[in-house]
Amino acid sequence: MNGRADDPARPQRPFAAPKPDDSGSDKRERSGAEAGGDDVGLREMGYAMVDLAVEYLQGLEGRRVYGPLTPAGLDDTFAEPLPEEGTPFADLVQDCRNRVFPNTMAIGSRRYFGMMNPAPLPLAVFSEALCAAMNQNTASWRHAPSGTAIEKRVIRWLCDLFGLPGRSFGTMTDGGSLANITGLKLAINRVLGRDLSRPGDDSAPGAELARLTFYVSAQAHYSFEKAVDLLGLGRAQLRRIPVDDLYRVDLGALEAAITADRQAGLRPACIIGIAGTTNTGSIDKLDRLAALAAQYGCWFHVDAAYGGAVMLSEMYRPMLRGIDRADSITVDPHKWFYMPFSAGGILVRDGDFLRRSFLVHPEYYMERVQRDAAAGTAPPPDRRGFHHGDKVNFFQYGIQGSRRLNALKLWLALRAVGRRQYAAWVEKDIELARVLAARMRRQPDFRILGPNTLGVCNFRWEPRLPDGGMRFSDAQNDRLNRELQDLVEREGDAWFSYTVLDGQVALRVNVENRNMEQADIERLVGVIRRAADRLLEANPDPVE
Image (cartoon, rainbow, N blue to C red; front, top):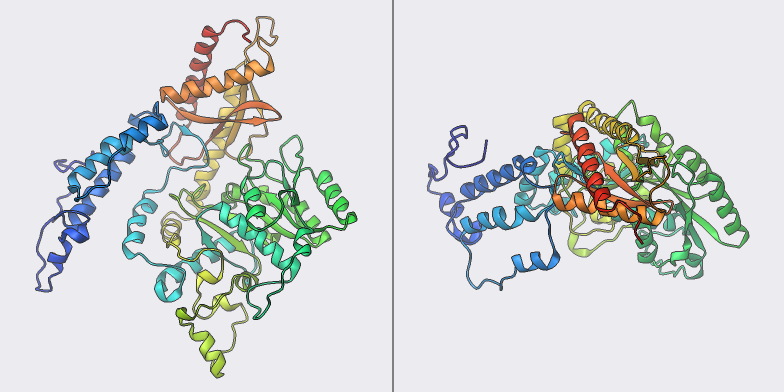
């Protein structure tokens, strides 16, 4: 199917069929103001946009993954004054086709091996339009009754998946960064014994806040640096702990840092475990971290934004042993749950504590629970926690106020796909990353770096002399690896990134595409090999 209106395989659609009543609904449907600029009916507009989306998705394998783009060139492409009059809808569709599509990263292509951006499930893609059409604000139960119930159900599924107790709860966020910030905020509240539910508590933590320390792997996500800054902490209060040879946090170094801080009169507040680092996919020893957190009275937060999806797989679930002991967990369904952006979340062992930490009572939200409590007519509290009982207002469970119904696409996808199929996709991605590692080991001038846990594979190109010795210096090899990535990027045959491990540039490939097969891995190896041979031909001798 090519998505064209004259496609014989495309079902005929009643674009302008009048409605059999005099309610004026057909007139409203075709109103130019509602349609967005000209006299186009909602159905006609909707069908055109669906066809455009299908055209994009079906054309991914027929176009370059990434074009030779420059910021200045793209700025010129979209340079135009604010329109004084509306633009015809057909012209807008053509602009998407001619200006937007050719200048995007082809995320979803089987030749994209970049960051943790998945090929999104079509059901989730189209559910986004439904979400926008309903335009529910899930900050408040009153403004999103079914949306609130759906998010509560999705949170319950996720809590159960990670082995958290019945009293656990959580909230969807726009991504893992916001979830990590929330986790550290909860750690501060727990250690200092403060939350927003206490009326009249205007105490300033002051010196107590300055004594808190937080511990995380040197391979952790940058969002933790943002978190300590946003929470009013000094950057030095985040202890970046060295890693072992598998790029997991060094447990000995961690315990030594905690001991030294305690002896210095500081107060360890939070131990952070990483379940799938961005660089290598490495997973900290979460069970050991949980034990240390319990021993030293620390909040235990796990960033499972990437690796959390392995909990779907009975085969790989043991990789995350100990995550069920976490106080809070970051999840990112817009990674390995194959959701389109955005869909993050945080799960918290004590759901009531999560609510107390963010509990505010604006008068305009008309909370009946407050009025009934004041009148002495409120129902008895649900022993499972407030979030299992009366109307849940999600703005009282996190940082965000206005919120999209991001849970809708995940709710639909989990029900349509089921855990077993999700597990099969995750397992295949991991297996394909291992196939890539095996193929690169056969290349005499490529060296595997890192443990290649989960779907991430890192390797380094190191050209050799006939006797097997190194042809270039480490610094020159760094340059060649960057040039190799750049050459592949410019030619558009594939896309992957590079990173730095132990001071050396490494090429980084991430497999996260349920449509990918082994033939796509073999093709990538060929693309890399040809690019390396061309660069070596152009640089036969060491260069300064």
